[in-house]
Amino acid sequence: MLYLVGRADRVVRRAMNEMLAAHGVSLNQYTTLSVLARRGGLSNAQLARRSLVSPQSMNEVLLALEQRGFVRRRAHPDHGRILQAQVTPKGRKLLGACEAEVAGLEERMMKSLSPHERRSLRTALLECVHSLDGGLIGR
Image 1 (cartoon, rainbow, N blue to C red):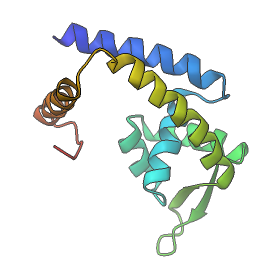
Image 2: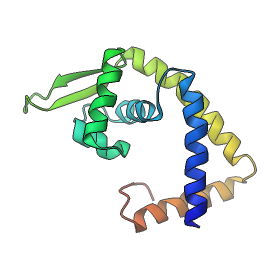
Image 3: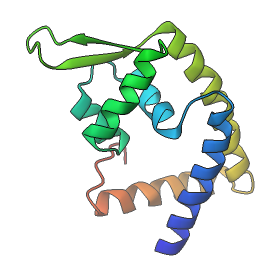
Image 4: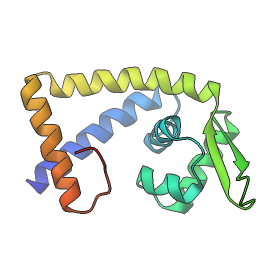
C-alpha cells in the first residue's frame, strides 16, 4: 500500500511539475500561492508547515514569488519582525490559470472512479493522513 501511495505521489508530482513549468512556476511556488489564496497573512513558518517545506525553503519560494510580483510581504502589525504574505492580483491570475489545469489533471486521474469511489478514496486518504498525525482537517 505504501508503495502505491508513493508511486501515486511521484506520478502526480511529475505531471504537475510539467504542467506548472509551462506557467513558469514550480510545484512549491504553486502550492504556496494556493495556500496563501485560501489563508493570506501567514508568516513564513506557518506557510512552510502548510506547504510541507522547511522554513528556509519557504523563504526562497516567497522571495522568488515576491520578485515576480505574485506575492507581497508586509510586517505584522503587532510583531514587526514577522512578515505576512499575501497573493497579489497578478498572483491570483496566475493561480487561476494553474488551478484550471490542475483540476483537469485531477479529473483525468479520477476518470474511471464513480462518485461514490471518489468520496471513499478521499475519506480513506484523509483517515490515513490523520492516523499518521499529518495535520489535515476535514474528515
